Image (cartoon, rainbow, N blue to C red):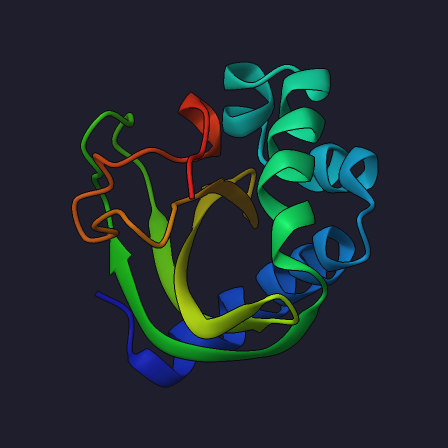
Length: 138
């Protein structure tokens, strides 16, 4: 188990950069920088279409704060490996209440890359809810 301060240093920059790309509506680049695990599960066009459908009604991102993070070596429906689940409280221009959006990163070739985003309606701890890998619903 990794110490929490080390966990934040190791994974937060990659996730934040990826989220900035998505916040800028650059879904092609977001797909390019996603984990191979995510890219193998979701074709580029589906990735782009899903995120556009989810993000467009929310408006621009106004504020995002890391609410919690957890390191794990297994997630339901995913192969064993090293994962980090980071839950962000995110405020959007067209949504009055902040959404809790867990972002899951997977270690691949020594680097942490985004492997899924779970809808705010789902339980991120067990990751059995719908994520971008299986058609995110918000």
